[in-house]
Picture 1 (cartoon, rainbow, N blue to C red):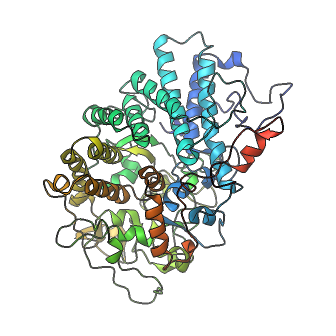
Picture 2 (picture 1 turned 90 degrees about the vertical axis):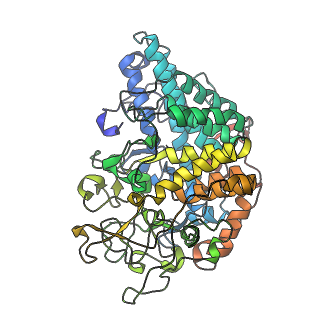
Picture 3 (picture 1 turned 180 degrees about the vertical axis):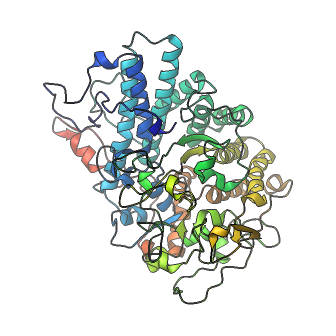
Length: 596
């Protein structure tokens, strides 16, 4: 469902009254708003529902996030809060640009950091829009019972998503629904039961197929419900739902869930909404005359930038050296080094100037590396050979690599790139959940309470796709002219194998989980999951402090990093929201432990 295919009703009742943002009762309706009488009908409610979907991208137009602030504060990809903080990537650019990200990435940021408030307001805007759908739907008299069920199930699915994001960011957050009249609610009650109830309602009531591909269906709700159970460690509840999603699930357009034949198809607009797409935010380039608000504006900083770069900005979100080292494989087995990957580092061009010779790493590699990170000497889509240091604004700060999954191709730049403002937009969709993610979450459940053999089957299914030559990057036929196309010679020494039969069973549960966690790291790299995975596994302190120790010796951006278990598992509640929650002279919202 591309937002550009709809005429949005940008007059959502109560929208703009962001959580805790309006303290005075208006004596007259705001100019440009519609009365309940005009909206409480079939067309109005459906317009409100489209607006609730529109909030998924966190944008309100141009480069401004919903509720104000910069677009990247509220990016739905969680490139800062999930990937940079999780060690997948350096902030990138240089230390003077967007300096508020540095303390977040190093875990010494306080509650006044504007990034927290921007994300909070954007997510509660989504909550507000879903609540308005449910409230006005109840007053509409021209909706059939089936239409009401569909609308309420979609709205509750979306509300479940927005609250899931809030929960994994801050843990204890206020619950506001369509029945709430006092919006100054405390954050003293765990909201997992309400999130689960919303997602289960959606799973039970949504249809398997939808008329528009971007709308949530039964199976997207099932995958999200199982994910919510998994985050609560309720494996016995998650497993049967994952089983159903894997064996029966289909996309909203009726495609049976499956892995794409080629790994890179997940980031090609021409192949979007494919069998791997479970729950996807639909991006569209050149659809908004005011700026690329529909074109993944929250990631507009995340393109290689420097001398000769074809992108107008900005050099952020550079894959970390530690991440890239995870893609080394054992030359004998084709398997990863689960515990000592940094003992077999992949050759970098740190400190190598453009005019100096450099030969890329010749050792065995997982082919997913070169669809994840731009490396010197390797084709960068069809833009040419990645030049290394010239495309890094400060290599000593952010490292030598460039992001790749979010970057459109030269051949389709006119249609897939959006140059409507000072930094690029992109038509590349963002998958909140894709089928590989589902398989690996299901593998966790199997390793915890089910069959280690089944867990290995799911992991091997993901690895088998990566091992298929159709998922490999190949060299150009002519390095000087990428328009000549690709040859049939692999771009690097790729070697990846499945785990041998009986491996998980013979090695045991702990080994199986380690292999599953590792597979999530490399399959879903740079997709916003890593930090939240580490926290729910209870190993964030071990993994991130080891990351700081290794990466901090090479790049200067994380030399001050230190993760404190029991504090940094969640972000600080935005101080602005605490200050606005005053009642009888005291704040209603309580700060998370360790931030007072």
